[in-house]
Image (cartoon, rainbow, N blue to C red):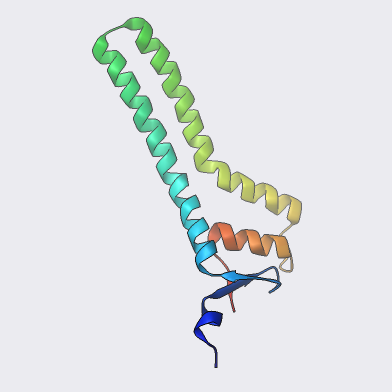
Length: 117
């Protein structure tokens, strides 16, 4: 019979690392929220700056904020894809071996695919 403590525990790394299941769930939720919220905020504030410049009808400010908006769009795309890029690089370096302990822990914290004890 398992007790409540062992139900709330997750393992990774072939069962060598044991931790509360709240930790990987929280981290993967934060990562997913960051992938969505940060690009939206960057685009929103870029459009807000550009809108202020257009309303002020200053040609120099419009051009400056247009360039700033393009830079912010690039940053938004990079933030959105940074987790996917890191996963790709880790899979290249670590391989996709089923017995890879590092990839097992990485997948647990990023995608919340943990082995429940």
